Image (spheres, rainbow, N blue to C red):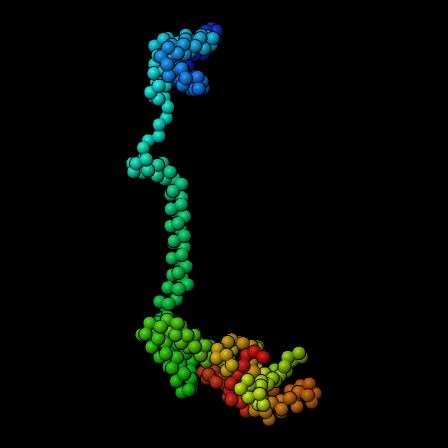
Length: 307
């Protein structure tokens, strides 16, 4: 009959089941621990130790358990020797490695998270920095070829070659910033070459048709500008890359102001003030394959994009 069955049978008969000597000794030790203060005092003296054993016999007898003297002797000796007390292992390399192995699940999550962050950072660096930089030589060659295929004038082809050569020189010198700038100029030229549009003076309610600037270095002078826009053959207003002569940057805009002489500026002003409509609103025309419009009004070609 199993131990479990024996316990159940003993309980049914109203008698206390027998306990294994070792388990009983551990229970005695546990009883002593609960009375730790008393136990410590009694174990210090051999005579009092006998009194302690007698009290233990009485405690178990009151519970209906007979505890043999040998078990009580073993329990008292075990308590003295600390046999049933957990003693942590010494702090050695072996125990540290064992603890790491036990906690490998949590550590693995942290290491996995760190590895994932590292992979993400590497991926972002590759996508946004390394890959674009590595692609500059191929992009320069590709855009150069596409732009030359669109160019129809010697002036346009010379400009394309200048941008391309500047990019190649920057790459040879390891100057990625200048190479990217040359590529941007080359791409802007390609876009312009593919466009065909009318340069028309802006004539809409609430929008200026002309502005002037007073230079900082000569407050007695004025720079005159006529505000224009690019309109393709279908009547759609385009965004075109325009070099701002004040900021030395190129921006894609749908409206800009071209530098004109005072006579042209005043003529546009009178035309608009006459009846609110600018009849002579055609400032120039840019054919496909050319970089610079063919202007029909006097202008230096200089432009601003903000006023």
